[in-house]
Image (cartoon, rainbow, N blue to C red; front, side, top):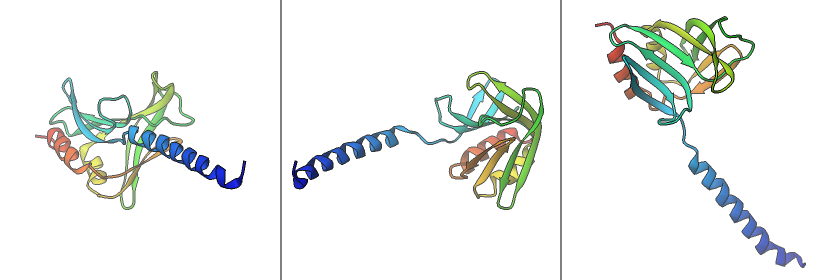
Length: 161
C-alpha cells in the first residue's frame, strides 16, 4: 500500500481512539465535598455523591464538638485493631487524630478511623490550601476547592452549643 494511502486510515484510527478517550474521561466523576445526615450523625464526606466512592468520612453528633473520622484510602503495614492515626498535612498546618486500624470488608483493605476535636480539623479546613490525608503507608492529596460551604454547614451543626 502506498504511503499516502495509509494516512486517511491512520487519521480515522486516531479520531476513533480520541473519541473513546474523551468518552471515558467524561464518564469519570471527580470526588467532591458534601454533607449528609445518617441517623443522628452529620457527615462531611469527600467522595462521589450517590456512590460508594469515598476517600474520607468525618462525622459528629450535633452539638458535640467532637469528630469521628474514617479514611478509605487503605494503608500499608497495619493490622485491624492496631493503634493508628489519621493525619492531615498542609503547607502551614498539621493535625493528627489518634485511633485504630479497621478492616474494610468491601475493599479488602485496612483503613483507619480516628477521633478528636472539631477545632483541630478546623485549622486544616480553613487553611484554603491543598493538604494531604495521611495514614500509615498511604497518602491522598486533597484540594480545598468546594470545601468552604459544606464545611461551614458541618461545623455549625457540630459545634458545641
